[in-house]
Length: 245
Image (cartoon, rainbow, N blue to C red; front, side):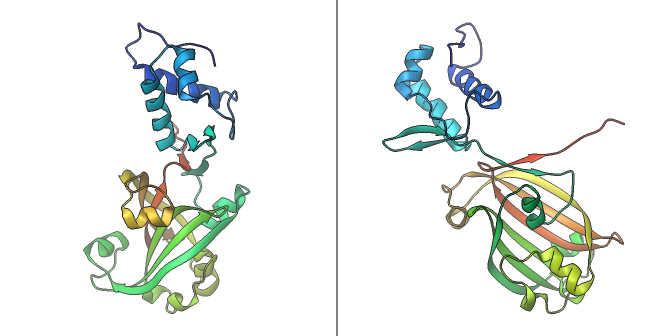
């Protein structure tokens, strides 16, 4: 990296340095596993304070771009998993299509009556019995998301006794009940993990995450599943395509 920080710019030095490191990653000059210069070296190279260099590395660490190893230094870890909003697939199939190894741990399976929100989302009567499945999703043995699915029991009686770990819920719905999910409406927002969620995802408490709510539909455009997911923002990035009419 060469010195590019500009004293006359209104952009703070830490942001300029962060942008420079990100440009080098995106341009291929820095790759996953590469070691960055130390705080002292960055400060000398860019003629900034060590505090500014430290602040830049801290931001990059929080965003999952770098990993700081005690006694070893700071390394590029920007190897994010891309999840898109272009095609609708199960988590398992989505990861397999990317050449990754998905796995699932079932956290709980139970039944609850539909509250007002579920009744509205799935267009069902208030109080209808729901099957509720909470799972922890892994990619290449790294936990990346906590998912919770709500499905009316009358659509899939006995599902709660059939679901197993490392099994695709959507494939099970199709095989056992003839329910084929073909599209979903999704909403997402930034949130922060609480203590229990952080422990499951192996991240610091109050880490930034992406919270999603989704309603999945079958071929007859009937609402079948309402789900929520809390996804690590340091590992996953989302992709979409937009077209102008």
